[in-house]
Image 1 (cartoon, protein in one colour):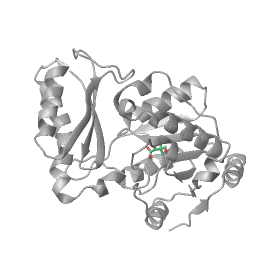
Image 2 (image 1 turned 90 degrees about the vertical axis):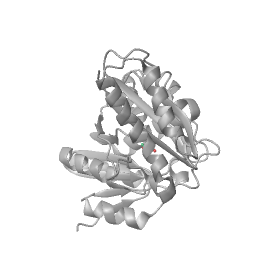
Image 3 (image 1 turned 45 degrees about the vertical axis):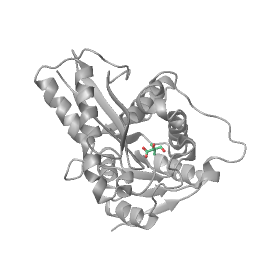
Image 4 (image 1 turned 120 degrees about the horizontal axis):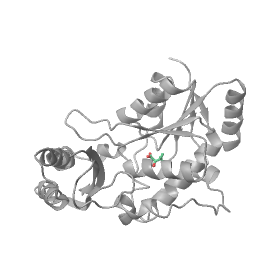
Length: 284
Ligand code: PAF
């Protein structure tokens, strides 16, 4: 196993990236909040396919968590993360602390006008401002040629692609497919917060999406019929609270009533205290 370099300051990371760029190496960045799982490992694999030098950032970004969200409870295990990164041939882990990225006088944020006004953005009003800001900062610090994000966070990926285009950033953003556990649950660091009794309720998200796929295949075009069925599937399980179930345009994320072209079905459900999201692209 090759050693992995751990960098904790902005200055050292920028210097390291400058050196790599000077040596003619291309850089791939996988931004994460740690507690890595198979989904992250697939992003790393994709990163190594596209670039010479692989950087994984691990930072639980406080600005993307609202009041009462799970910032403090967010799971952490740096030693395990480090072992996984070594196994995947990661060259650098960038692991700053919060004061390094948000010093006392910090006051500049990136906010998008439209994409955050849908799906997760409705119940998490500060979330995408926090995400866009931290991702911009990471791009400026790591200076990657490409950056890879999972499609499980579909809205996040859309926000980042839009921001990169709007601000003429040169980094190439790649979306990688959702990785699922054997029973279909979309991989997430938060899955470890689910007790075994909550598993069937957690699986109701994937079940609802598959059901929608089948309904559309059978010719159903009315979104209300499909989302109503999804609600019934989720509500069948106790201790679930639906945040949203939406059928929308994959580009604008605006609701679609009558399905005539490919749509995104996206949902967020709280199972016990754990908020889960999942999505699927569906074609009539
Ligand atoms: O998807 C995540 O893990 C985070 O939102 C990200 C992109 C690392 C920004 O903090």
